[in-house]
Length: 408
Image (cartoon, rainbow, N blue to C red):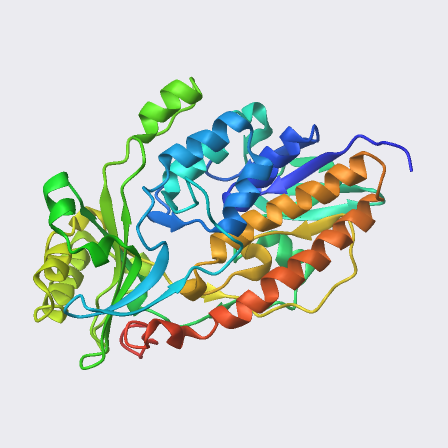
């Protein structure tokens, strides 16, 4: 086969779409990312990166941005594990994070989501374009991405990286159903500042990894993860990648859950400032008998950081005939966060697809052959994780409450 020049259309500028764009740019493959909101918006707080996700970032990012990612990541915690404690901060169990080996002087830990997205979107230039994806059309070897404003873009292939409610997946695989898991309790997220005096006064176990506190007597589950960067991200960016905009991140503890079973949790679209105050009061009451350090983390939550999120997921989709349209990330394997693998699996997709398309551009694989090989590897890696993560009882049950008629 002869070398060919590819132009790849990417629908969606989330983690997988941007990581793919970085990988393609590094491989010398033309691409354009269409994102309805190119400006980085609030998308949660920290995200755990394991060996799978970290290796994908190393494969796709240029050296300066990869080094920036490492320096902006969380300081290496002593255990580098998922740790379960009781309501009095006594350790009950610990287990390694799922995924590839993750060793070395600076292992992959966690990073502020906004920081990661700013790094992934850096240096892409006019390859990152505004546009709300509406669907696609195929015409022989050409695919046309349709945008909501009536415009379109043509390329050799299209990658749907547009999330769990993907417009590309709806057109490609119309029979796929998005499942509302009904999980509400751990869908409440918040942030508590960790200035040095607070950070240093916490029991070591609460900083030892990603921590889940459980209270079987009340059914309350509180998940927490510290975000104390190895280096201030904006300082690292100024040295390593001048011109790359990365917002400051002060150390904080991300909290999720802390809700008694049966407590009403309004839908995300219905949240107001008053909702945050009411839910916060519910959380404070739920942990009133807990260890003072755990209570303090909940009591000091910044109300304007609180928000709710519905957990949606997909079931593994049977294989389909490969073509010049494919899917990555949540568009094809949205999953519950119980394994901490959603974002890591999305980044892993980007690295696999980059490698296959690079082989196609070199003439070593046909384009559809390369896409089919990616899809086979993606399914083999992601589908078992989807099935494991669907077991939401891994979180201890209490915080993962399904809706009733009043709160659905």
